[in-house]
Length: 417
Image (tube, helix red, strand yellow):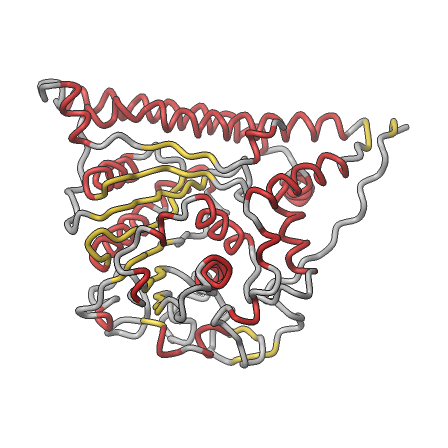
């Protein structure tokens, strides 16, 4: 794995106005041309699926161990959890990804309206258990300690205590909800379902400097259609972002692959609704998975229609191809390692140590030390989880919500008999 492969990847999408100036006409925007371009994106998706299908014969637990071993962020997360000077809650993979995004795109906060006048606030959609909130406040404590206030945050998520909530869809870790109930929004029907009308009615008249959407659906039974199955959720999150964002505000939305028509419409609408729009693949996100983050900066105050033009699809095809090809290469590299490891026990310690150090330096994680006590997110409620019946039970875990199970040390490089 080369150095550039463990750094955050960013590609800027072309705005519709720029494309129109380049094309100087709209005669190519016909249904036939749109169908042809959708077909080119579908071809990229098909090539990725062909690569992914090579994993079908592998034992899932063993494959997870392999990809974790090759992923530099897993060791970074381990070090953060073991560092007693860092007591930030919810040190999870999601926490690390959002912290990395904030560190690499500081304009998400720095360019927000009235950030220096005590006016920065944030809304986090589909947020439970609250890792993005924790990462934001930790980053703020590290980089904005000169201000005498913390972001006024709000969060929306499926209500884990509502009887209509699907047990399979709800995140059961509810510590942040119980500790800060006034900051969580569940809508007029109290379900927190973002699909329901009035899900954000409690925030009537309130606009935000930063809005994030990190929702997902369980696609374990149908992983090939993750993007399609998530389409309704992603569209609802995007609409909610535009609905609650301040003029000139910024936003972050998790997407998958960006080859399906639903995702492409979000991309084009965002490119016409914001001054700068980027697709980002954090280094702390496993290179072989499909998640990407849409970074939107400088909201114009009005959401552009969710529709596609031939010019936009043509201009940004190479952006999506870049990320698809990087994902395919990551899967191929992991498969090659797995194949070699059948005959050899490979000592990856130096590889992991080197990449971990590079990633830690790029995220300036050393600067986290000593900031946790003043992150504005001190929890007093005992750590626990909620069952589908709403009964709170103690969780057999220690200082954070998701225990890290240490893997056995990798054997030295020696031939198997």
